[in-house]
Image (cartoon, rainbow, N blue to C red):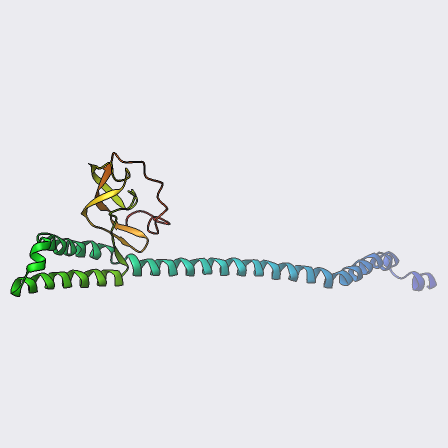
Length: 210
């Protein structure tokens, strides 16, 4: 029948009609898809870039920290050994201190050779300590610095500014920019007040004894 030919199965026309909005929506989605995909990819690239920069910064921090630790180990790794060597330096200094200036000036023969040998050994020891970053502190005449010196007693002396180191009981040493051993000193009192001392190289940036 014609009605059957024109209309087809019941509801067919409805299905054809309802498919039009779906097709339009699919076409619109397809048109927007490249833009949204681009935005998604750009977001992923930005996220990966951020992660890479963070990882690179962390790796750089680790490398710098390792470099500092290696440098510190080279400078301060011998601190314990150096302290033991200082006992030898003290013994040599005490041996030379027992010889007064007159005896040293008039010494001859074996005695002179002994004195010269001890002096040569002491100079060589101090030179080798300096080679490895260990330096002797010579504070006589300087203003007392608690970062480098340890006061053992006071010496009444009005002719010298109060707070000036006038005697060294035991020499001090620094390693790098740290105190290996403070100098044991006698400090003047009774004289005019000493001006403030300029910050010493050893005290600047010092993190305490090694």
